[in-house]
Amino acid sequence: MEHLTHEPPFKITFTPSRVDWNSDVSLVTVWPNRLTVETVDGEQEFLFEQIGKIQESGIMRFMRRLGGAKQFGLLVADRDWFHPPQDRYFRFYTDPPMTVYMPADEAADYEESVFFRVQAVILCGGFETYDVG
Image (cartoon, rainbow, N blue to C red; front, top):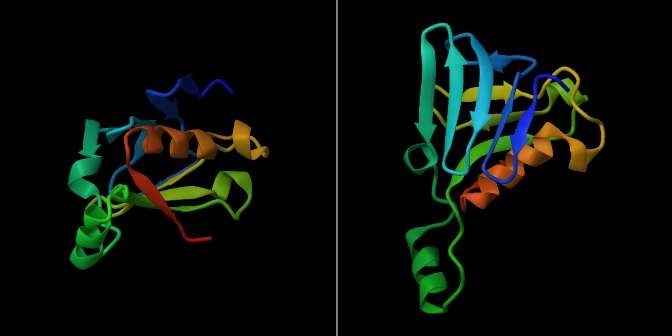
């Protein structure tokens, strides 16, 4: 895959098959703490701390903390694997939401896929994605 660079576990850069957003995106890089996209206007960066959503209520967070349980990471995107490879996507919680579809020549094998690697990089930063499939 010529469009893919991967330096585990720090980042993954790829050319998406398409992106639904308000600007043309030519390249996507996912870091453990942020998303960067190349557009005709230059590079744009979205910090996961800023776009993330809390997964549970304040009461549940308090109860987990009180009980010594690990806190859930912020959700930064929805994900859907149950499509043909180039139609698999992550919908990041940017404003407006950005849906990034996997490369046109995405690997069919899950563990070799860009989809899997994107998830792994996000998890390395302590953030999570929501499975809509």
